[in-house]
Amino acid sequence: MKGIDGSFDVVGARGALAFFKTVEPGKLAHGYIFTGPNGVGKKTFARRLAQSLLCETPKATLLGYCGHCIGCKLLVAGTHPDFVAAEGTIKIGKDGASSGGDEMTARELVRELSLHGYRSAYRVVLLGDVEFATHEAANALLKFLEEPPAGVIVVLTTSAIGKLLPTVRSRLVEISFGPLTAAEVESVLVVQGVLPEKARLAAEVSLGSVTRARAVLDDDESGIREAAFEWFGEALSGRTPDHAFLRLDDRGRSAGEKRAAVRELIEVVRIAARDWAALALAGEDVVLLAADKRASIERLPKRAPAGQLEVLAALGEAERLANTNVSAGLVVDFLRMALAPQRPPG
Ligand SMILES: [Zn+2]
Image 1 (cartoon, rainbow, N blue to C red):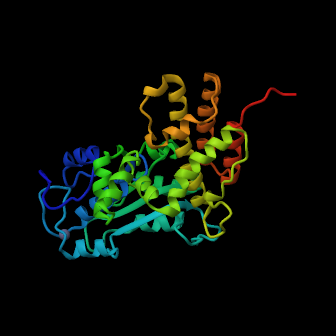
Image 2 (image 1 turned 90 degrees about the vertical axis):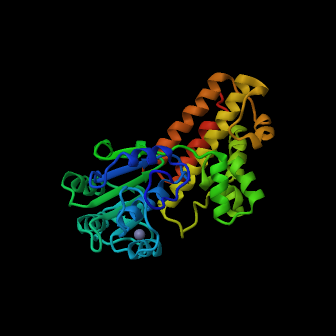
Image 3 (image 1 turned 120 degrees about the vertical axis):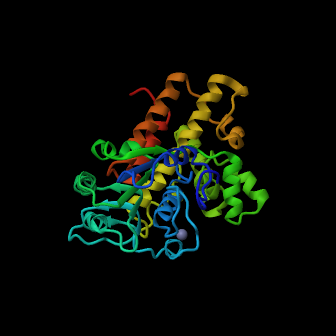
């Protein structure tokens, strides 16, 4: 890539590339937050940024790595001592210990943040799609940001910036990532080994998200998009649709995973509802977000504009609930009841 010394292999991320090109090495902040939809390359960018900082070949630019030094090899192998990646929920454990899975306790976070680089002048901590289960957990990060040890850099990623405490958010440098173009999604899928023809079709319905494109490709997960559209239609009709596809009864899944499944349902239903309202408002010429679903959206029960607004408002409320400790099942029930045709009392 022009202007970068070494490789920096990302797709899209135009805002982030432009931003970091203006940052001089040594002038990095201690905390960044990458915001934007799922599947647009936030975590990939964070890993490439970490590799750039931990690459041991001298370079003139901040972004870029050589790909063959020991630092690069350790990072790619996932064993670099100065790079820590965690995803999921950070909470205060009952005994300070992790409950396993992808959850991290506040004590573990504090330890990761207090260590200096071992091989390198930097230490990079990536907290991907992290949620702070308690105020105390968020405070652990705040304490770090108030007095950060030299060379330690935290990168958070989130698709729901509103969930972050304002006190945490205000201390982070925020960089937004937009949806990818269909061609970019297609190119990522092809690199991942998807057949070109399949990649093109999945990219077209991906809404700019590699995650969603993969969900379309993956039978197991494509269930969610298909099933969520079906669920929306049933709920609008006042029936009680099956939500087994969300796997909320699966004991092997954490509460965080279940909430993520419900957020995915809400995201797909939001797209379906926007298309449903747009079709009613603007008629047949309207360009739909889910163009491949036009026929089934046209078959959905009609509502007066006020009723459509209620549906959109209910989605906002369901999203808010999905970001609290309300159980995933209750959020689904709330949304289903809010979408059902409202009959006058009595
Ligand atoms: Zn290197």
